[in-house]
Image 1 (cartoon, rainbow, N blue to C red):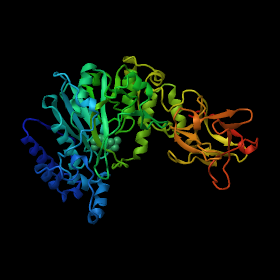
Image 2: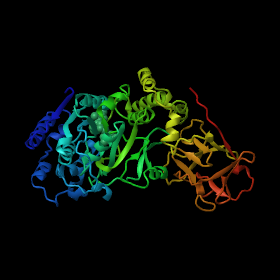
Image 3: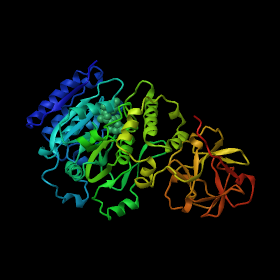
Image 4: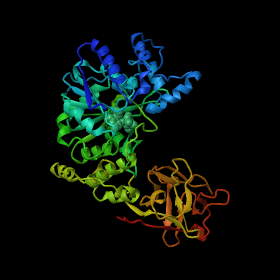
Length: 530
Ligand code: UDP
Ligand code: MN
C-alpha cells in the first residue's frame, strides 16, 4: 500500500506544467487499486490542451453529449467516481468558461498588495482529468504573484482521512492565506482577488466563493446564485436557502458585496493562516468528513469571526448524487459521531432538540471533547442562542413552539407521517409508532406545522395536505390549533384538518369543520430519552 504522498507544484515556468502532468500520469499508473484506469489514457484531454479551439467538447462550459454507441461504456465509467468520467476525459484540461460574474464585479479594482495564498487540494481516488483541470484552472486564472504554491495532498488511505489530510496540507503550506479546494473544481476568471481582498480588509473573515455547478452528467458549467446562502436542517445537514431580506438590506441592495452566511459547504474557502490556527483549525476528533463544515461555521461565528460568501468569486464544483467511497462501519456512523461532537461542544441546550430528531446520534461513542470545550472557553465564544438570534434568525429550528412530536388523530388513532417524502409531495398518515423520525412535527409559535424545513400547506378547498418549503408568510401554511376542541383550523380556507378520504387513503385532507372525532388531533410533546 502506498503511504501518504504529497507533491508540491512549484510554479516556475509553464514548462513545469507538462512535467506535472507527466508526473501525475506516472504516479497514477502506479496506483494498484486503479486497474480500470490504466488502460484509459489522458491523451484526449492533453491533446485538447495543445490544440484548443472554442468548438472543442465542453468549451465555454458547454455540456458534453456522449454518442449513443458509447453510452454503455459511459455508464460503466460513471460508477468509478460517480460522475461522467468519459465526458470529463474528453474536455480540455484548460477549457474555457463563461464569465458568470455580476457586471458590478467585473469593474472592481483591488489593492496591489493583497495577501498571497497557498492552494490546498486533498484528493481521494480522484480521476486524473478532474484533478488536473482543477490545477490548470487555478494556475491559468490566478495572478501569478498571489499564488505561492498548489499542494496536492493524496489521501491514500483506505479509510479516508479528509480533515486530517487538510491539516497536513495546511501545515506544509507557506502562504499568508490558505485556500482549500475540492479535487474536482474549476476556477473562473477573477475568482481569487475578491477572496483575498476581503481577508485583507478583515483577517477574521473566512470567505467562500459562489459554488457554481458542474453537472455530474454532462460537465456543463452552470452559474450558482448569489441569492442563496448556507444553512442547515433539523438533522444538521448542510442546505442552501434563499438569502433573507435582512441580509439584502444590510448590504443596501448591493449584490456584489459579501453575503454573511450562517454556514459554509465546507470544501471551498480561504482563511488567513494565523487566524486558522488561532480559532483551532479542525476538530481532529472528527472522522473523514460530514459535520466538519458546520463545526467550523458555528465556531467561526460564535468565537468572533465571520463567514461570508464573496459573490464576485465563482468556482465550479462537480456535485455528485452519491458518494463514491465506502468506509468500514458505513458513512452513517461517521456522520453520527461527528454530529454528536458538534452538538456537545457548540449547541448548548439546543442539542436536545437535535437528539430528539436524530436519536441514533445519542447512541454513538463520540470520544473525548474536552480539548474542544477548552478551546471554546479559551476563545470566550458566545452561546449557540446568540448565533441563532443574530446570525441565523431564519433557521429551521423553531425556537418557540407549542409542540414537537406526533400529531395523532382521535378517530383512527393514527398519526400524520411525512413518509420520508420530499418537497412538493403529499404528507402521509400511518399507524403511530412513537419512534419519532418521520412522525415528528412541530406546531410553532408562528402557527405553522413543520417537519424539518417543510411546512404543511393546502392551496384549495377540500384539498390534500402537501409539504412545501416553509415561507414564514402564514397564508396557506397557517393552522390554528384549538386545544379544547382539538381542531386544526386552516385559516385561509376556514376548513378543518380531517383524516384521509376514501379516494386518497393515506393523505390527510381539509373538510368543512363539523365537530366530528376525525377532525380532532392530539399534539404530543416528545421528551428526550437518554
Ligand atoms: N476526500 C479525501 N478523503 C476522503 C474523502 C474525501 O481526501 O476520505 C477529498 C475528496 O477527494 C475531495 C474532498 O475531500 O477533494 C471533498 O470530498 P467530496 O468531493 O467527496 O465531498 P463532496 O464535495 O461530495 O461533499
Ligand atoms: Mn466535492
